[in-house]
Amino acid sequence: MQIDPRDNVEVDLQTGHKIALKDISEGENIIKYGFPIGHATQNISKGESVHTHNLKTNLMNAVEYSYSPTVPTAFDCYGSRSFMGYIREDGSVGIRNDVWIINTVGCVNKIAQRLAQATGAESFPHPFGCSQLGDDMHNTQKVLKGMVNHPNAGGILVLGLGCENNNMEEFCRVLGRVNPDRVKFLNAQDSHNELVEGAKIIEQLQLYADTFNRTEVPVSKLKVGLKCGGSDGFSGITANPLVGRFSDRLIACGGSSVLTEVPEMFGAETLLMERCQNREVFDKTVKLINNFKEYFLRHGQVIYENPSPGNKSGGITTLEEKSLGCVQKGGRATVVDVLDIGDIITKNGLNLLNGPGNDIVAITNLMSAGVQLILFTTGRGTPVGAPVPTVKIASNDRLFENKPNWMDFNAGSLLENKSMDEMAEKLFDYVIRVANGEQTKNEINGYKEISIFKDGIIL
Image (cartoon, rainbow, N blue to C red; front, side, top):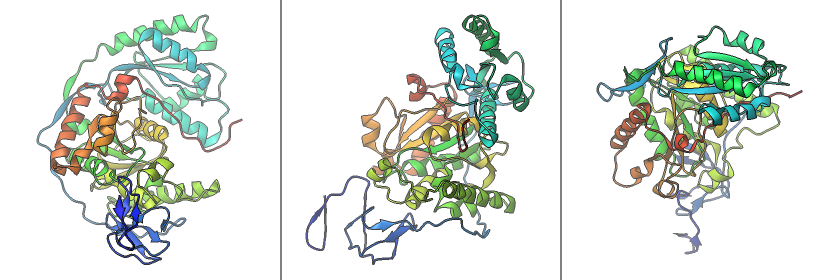
């Protein structure tokens, strides 16, 4: 409980919520992380709680930005680091060697599930691939293409129905050339018994996958996705900056990281724009931000309606506050590229990826871009996981201790006596262990799913 200095009335202040450190006048900006997170809607006295009842966003619609580059902070690599990965024939490196069943259409979800249960392969249901038009269909095809080409999969069965919009012939036009030993195809309508035939194909794919063995490769081959789920007041103090420090160290070693959730860049986007490698990357970042704002407006939604009920309960009031914490996952490295949904990482360094903040859509986009694992910070907790290892990083001790079957790493130690550098090295070591084969909680529990971004109509 916080004592209100005006009249000794007790203020019910939950863990992770904010109090004013000085008197704040109505209309004055409220500062957190050194930047405005909105303005006061009434006079606020020192010691008073600050939340939705007296704080409002400053966000507006599309904004004109100017390119004012800064010199990024330089970090050193943690010595000569390596991990044991699976080197694929195209030179990409996986950290798992699974057989995946990729559906061209949602109609065969249950067939894929039955095949997975019978063979040990993995399936990832989704409702799309038919009755889609334009960009929606193209997004579906690009995301599925990213899955087919993902290096964590040693073998792929592409499973279709036969009459869908995203039929095998259409999908193969997008997919392009593949290794027929690694990628095989089956249309359920063309098979007398798709379960029997599918099981035989998966057996062949498993034999092919078994020809790969773990080989030592430099950590520069590692590509890591950066994501935050439901946040609390500690997320921007512990888990997110910790992941940012990890990202900086990985990039210093020649690796790559990918930051997504465009709406959770709103209000903090200039911090990323200042670190763009050149004018071209800056222009792509401006387009990324303003296009997503236009997407909100096109659907009649206000651009600042983020923090979710869970975020607000955890102490996050405005989208700027959420964003200023969120972008810390990107550390201080140079932004080298901006990717659209379905694009593949081609440049080492910090990449920005188009897409919403929705947890399952975001981790799907990251996986499709080619990351071998995802660092997923949260102050609220969630079991959700991607087809790739999804490391859940708790922002506080209470969450880590309360949900041991969900959480993999505790950033809450930063609130005690642990330094950022000490914890970053510990996280780096843990990521290497995951890359070497140690299973994350989402893998142990089988929590692996996908959700493909949709904007248009369905026939």
